[in-house]
Length: 153
Image (cartoon, rainbow, N blue to C red; front, side):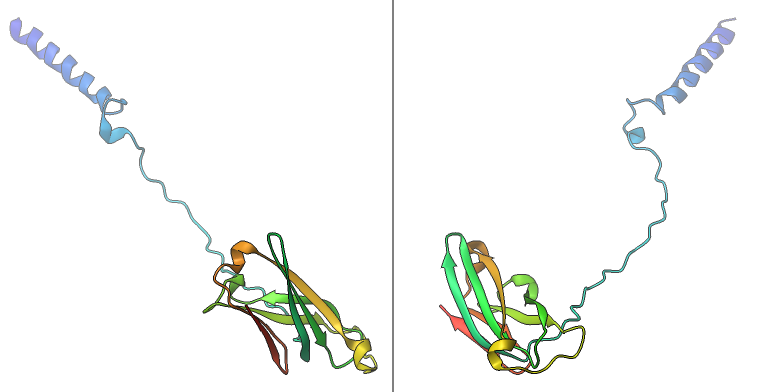
């Protein structure tokens, strides 16, 4: 009889151990089983500016302001009617060997325009550069199709 009671007690004790496997007391069950999920890798699309470079940069000026500076560039396209002028930063507007570089880009006219006089074709573009971005900058240059202009500190 004692053997039978011992056997039942042993069975009851061992069956209780199975519940401990799923409990929070068991460190091996703190994290669940791994699950596989499908992921779709999206390619990074680099946006390319389709606007052409201005023919030439005829002036470049930097005006200091509290908190930074304004860079102004005057461009001369081949004909009248160019619009949406912008100084597009290269290298994510981080200096390369102390030089901040911009491209002078503008949208062409929707229809062919007359050449006109030089003053009638002048286009102005500008951008603000914060003091934080100006740290370590010794030169600022603007690139056109036919030339580039640089200002130094």
